[in-house]
Length: 87
View (cartoon, rainbow, N blue to C red):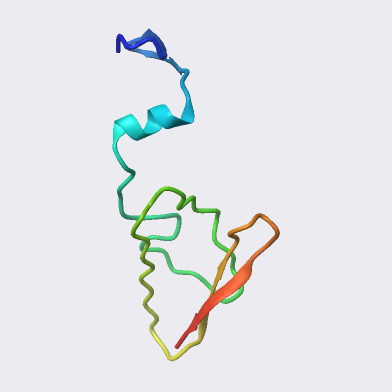
């Protein structure tokens, strides 16, 4: 990559640039996460999942019995806050 921000070779290197340079790569897209297709137990917290920059966020949940699922989000780095309880 000859644009002055990447220093290295085909085996690896480092990228140096400003945060605005990231937008030149295109907006972030994707599907998945730390719990995709994983069985979990009550009270078991997820690993952190960075969602910053995604303009369309969606959570899909399934359960094999009637349960209440409390979706908590740490949006201000002060701890988890209940976003929604789903039946």
